Image 1 (cartoon, helix red, strand yellow):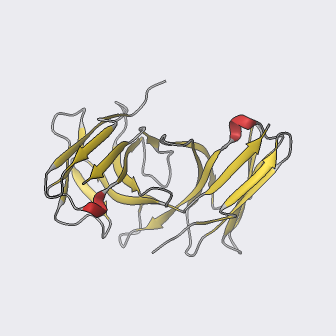
Image 2 (cartoon, helix red, strand yellow):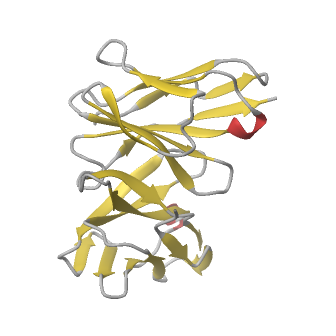
Length: 115
Length: 115
């Protein structure tokens, strides 16, 4: 069964550094998402992406965050200048239709630790 | 703003017992979905119930939806140790344009099934 893959599984970075989290969504899916989960807390929506542009973003997704689908297969999340509070598990997801009408398929996440 | 809220936060039962988890939400929805998350892994879609449906079954899972009370329940019958996981409900939020763009997750119910 096709799956969403994320790399790396764990990323440690120093405060102020830039990180890029990578995702390969399921190939025929059209909608792409990033969510994050701080340990033991709820899964928070960051951004949705469709037709090569951001369709919706949360208040968390400020100017320090950006997403890109550079080559038709990868979907990346960049954090320009990481803060301690960015430490979390970041999940990429994709779906065939909009998130409300189609199941989301999640990757296993990238654990980001900012020191 | 937070949409789905699961209840209870944690539930511990014996193998063979039924597990019931509840979800309440605040605004009108098109659909409600339930997901499962094993520790340290991505979320896995379990079931989607539309706003015009009242009950849906999938194997040992039964989901109900009461739109008048803005609540849903997930019942796992004849639970197994392998059902140990966190369970999340997710609801859509209508964007200003009217379309549903994203899923909003609650904090989840942590289910432990003891052998």
